[in-house]
Image 1: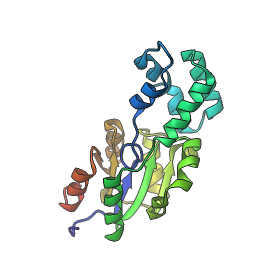
Image 2: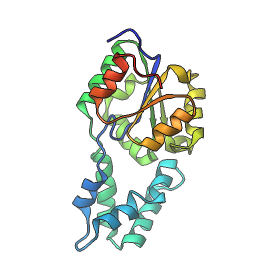
Image 3: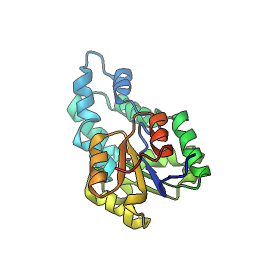
Image 4: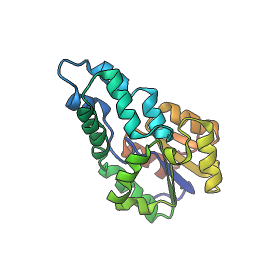
Length: 205
């Protein structure tokens, strides 16, 4: 790995370290005769999903709200929400990049929008969490990306210099929010170009 490395690298989780595919979840759990787009909007694209991530809505209440909006059976919705957790599977190239950064001595962090229940499910299942010097889960601090306060929390909590901190996220609005706080944030699409950006010293915004 090249010499001009950032001091810190921060990773989002969904579609950065672990796969995340709501359309596939909707396809596999859509009630008979249901409209996939409406079903997705009523669950994954609804403010209730954001409130789960913010930690201000618990899963049991969210399921009742999903049922009220969709008319789907509660047991189907339970299976969908459980599948949303189990579908978060490791992305091998991303984990290889993570390990390379770790071997190079870069301090690694997580900044993720995630509910309490999802984090409780994922935390004991993957050893790679131990590579991180710090982990910020939105539900635990009741802040979500792209709120400015969550980036400030990350920087303050771990005394990070934003000019020496690279952040990878798969959502443009989260990248923009981080950049507004001076962080060297970049849109993550695949591990290879993210690695090239860091290795070639092109990580400064």
